[in-house]
Length: 153
Image (cartoon, rainbow, N blue to C red; front, top):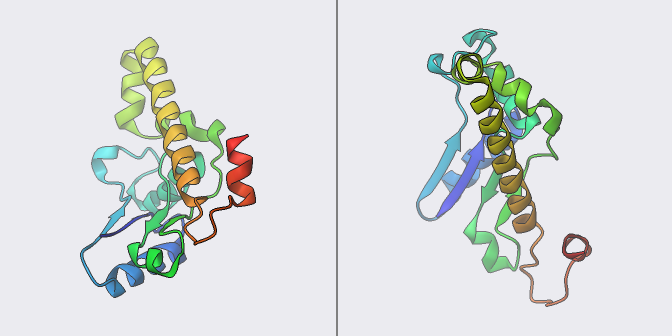
């Protein structure tokens, strides 16, 4: 199954590439798009939803990637991480920019701090896992790539 995670406001080209790959894939495809809605309570307003998507990716809340199983037949890694290394220092500010998270912080600040830290840790774990998957060597050569060797150190 072809699967991709996109955010149009963060990277139009990656979104289009994922949709084209999904369409071309000979089998089922799923494209998961980050799409803020009114219930998120974007403090900047819904007119800034594309900007919100960009910030979600920049801070590490949402990650861009593609999984194309057809690449495995070519000896290539089917997983592509398209997000750059996030600026984790922006993570909490991103959460506080949406009413759904900011209201928790106002009502239960101590609990919110703990939950925000847990959310950030989870996002960091996911990004590191995606990075590891993207660096796997899918070719016939059993030797590690330099990136894989660096990750194992």
